[in-house]
Every structure is written in C-alpha cells, then in structure tokens.
Length: 437
Image (tube, rainbow, N blue to C red):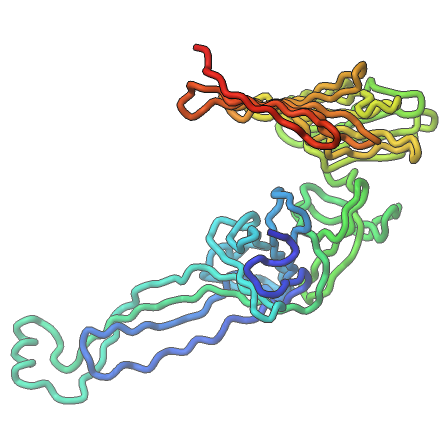
C-alpha cells in the first residue's frame, strides 16, 4: 500500500491548504398528517471539527514509518474567540488518520473517519450520527372528538382534542474541506519547547520565537534543519526554518572513541523525570579533530534508552576496508535476543560517514576481522532459530550462508535447513530429526 495518496480513493488527494466549508443548513420537516404512532425524524448538521475553523493543512506521510499517522489535518488558529460547539473534541487543533482513513494520532479520543472526495480535491471528516429523543409534539385534531373518544379520554385521562407525536433528532457530524493550494507537507509537528523560526537555512537571527505547543507543517528535513510552514487564520502561510539543535532538550557527551582526524559527541534526550537515568541517544556529531568544527551530524536513527555515557559510540571496521566506522546501540530486541546496532560507515573518497541500513538491519551481529566475516542471529520464538553469514563481495554486503531450525507443531521433530552461496546461487540442504528430550 503506497503512501502519498489515500488508498481507497480513485484519485490522489494532494497535501496542501484546504478551506473548511460550513455545514449544510438545517431544514425542519413538515408536520405529518393526522396519524397515530408516528415518529418525526428531525435532521441537523453539525461540524466535526472546531466550528470557527476556516482553513486547514492536510499533511501526508511520505515514508512507511509508523511513528506518525499517515494523514494529518491541522486547523488554522482562530482569528476570534471560538464559538461553542456540541460536537466532541471542539477544542482540538488537528486530527490524525491511518492509511485507511480511521482515527489515529492527533485528537483520537473520538471516532472520526476521513473520506476522500471523488474529485480528488476535497475530503470530509465524519463522526458518528448523534441521536436524541425530543419531547413529544402535540397536534390539535382537525375534527371535533367523537362521543366515544370523549368517554375514553375521561376514563384514561388524555386530551380528546389532539394527540402527541414522538420526535427524534438526528445530528449528522461532518466537516467538508476543499483544496485551495497544493503544498507538499510531509507531516505535522507539535513543538515541545519554544523554538526560534529562522528566515533561511543557516540564518543567524530568527524572525520570531514559536511557543511551546505550536504546530507547524514540515516541508523538508535534514540532519540539521527543518523547513516548515505555519498556517495563519486567513489561510496564508509563514515559511521558515527550525534549527534541530534547539528543538529538543539535549545532553551532549564527548565520546572516548576518537580517530586521528575526528572527534565525536553523542546527544541524549534530556527531557523527562530526573529519576529516569536511562535516556535514548538521538544524535551523533562528527567534529574535526584539529579545529573542533562540526562536520556532520546524524539524527533519526532508533536507539533504545541507555545510561548516558562517553562509551556509547564505538569504532569498528565493519566493512573491512581499513578505515574505522561508527556503531551505536540500536534495539534490545525485546524479550528475545534480536538486538540491533546502528552502523555509520566511513567513505574514504568523500571523507564522510553515512548510515548503512543493510548492516544496521542485521540482528545480534558479530564481526570477525580475521575472516572478514559478519555473523547475524535471531530467534522467532522458543522453537525457531536462525543465523546467517555475510561478507563484502565487490564492496557489497552479501549473504554467503544461513542456517535455521524449527520445531514441528507437536514438538517431536526438528526441521533444519543449511544454505551456502555457490556460484552466485544459494544452495540448501534440509533434514529432519527427532527432538531429544
């Protein structure tokens, strides 16, 4: 399922600036004819989003990461005091939806659905219909009551000159959005702390300071800067840049690992309670050993919490080219031994480090410099084990063998597979043997 368009729509729904259309008007139905046991259904329309909202940003996630909802709607701030609303989440500033359009993320306390319009330039946010029973409506009879009705009214205590009709009010909760200007917004970000908004990438003086809790749309991100937009009440936008060093509370620690040309620092997330001594590593800085100038910075890698330390970063020649590479803890793998490590390989041509996804995706990794071999292992459960062997062939990480074993459902047998790379193809042998008690 591809991101970038809503999967259930026939045409792509572009990210950008949308106008929030007012709800359809309400029309009271005419009173029914003189019939008994009839229920009037009165239909009303109410906005699903904040009733004073006029403009909104629609953001679409452009990667397969599940960190953020696939689709996000951010309402523009109100130019006036908000009007009262009978709908849920009336104070909500935005909404998040998964790739099926169901509520996910921002303001998910109530069930909403995002539905794309057939024209590819509009959508609706729909909530559940709200139904309530209204007081009965009294209707005067056109004809005078008969003697029998008068007698029955005296006996049972009702008015012989008219009758009551039950009424049910059904409120349809929906807000409609129409495209005003496409804009490639990747996602919505809520700031954790006051952050300067700069007029350009690398600028020294900010245009303004955005308050903590402010929300912006992200247009572009690199390791140091974010290009963002802020939506104004009139639908116009303010563009700017955020320095990622200022966006989080960080604790930078110089690392013991050094080379003749480089020094390194690791930033740990310093937000949170003081008693929580373990913090995730969120950035790695590469500095010139002579001048101290920042040469590179890495972010957006996953690293579980650990004790902040000067030994968090390690040097290892992971690709056996004679140049030290960087590694830092990734994931513990939960209850199993499927731990991971983040690797940043040094390129002697560019004299820069680069994150290596292929190597970082291997679990429970061990590197043997003598045989220039990399080993990986994993466990699927108590009864499923896997290992693989890798080498660099013509500069490319290549699997040269693997082994696996798995218990049968009755637990009496072990099915084992052994594979080796031969003449460019993986050739495997299988055997089955009884499990020893």
